[in-house]
Image (cartoon, rainbow, N blue to C red; front, side, top):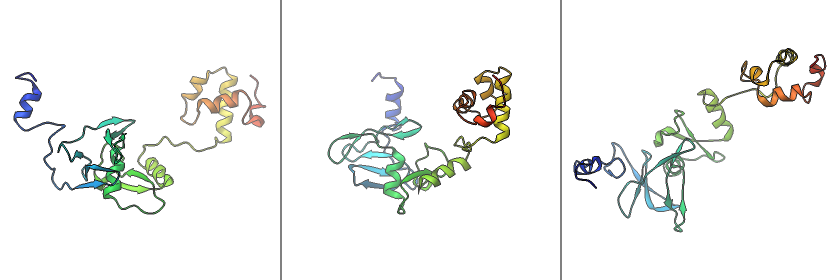
Length: 189
């Protein structure tokens, strides 16, 4: 390391964002049965028992994960919220998904995690506005609107831009007269 580098200065001051192992306020550490050589924190941090250093975490598909060895020495990339929930959050039978209560996938604090069913998890995402929710079926008036637009020569992209419910698949199936054939038969294109 260079004498005046940020890393060197931070190290002298005892500040290092990856390796500062000082406990946070109220932080509790526990061992996970599948990863016994690491400690899992209720604040969402992972620490090596051997080196007493925090494990680097990365964002992958919107969630924090890390590269650690399991109890057999095989490298794994578990999602940190699952590790925290498995160690700190009581699990009810039939609830196998970990839900972030505040909707923030990067907040892996144990008090922000809960076990849920797939239905509960999806409903929670809809309530927080995290899921793009569309009902399964278009209404007849919507199909008539799409047919009128197709008849006028509107492009698929133009039609799709009018509503989130007008998906590429739905518009194309109406245009090809695969779906809603009774209504599309009333129009000429």
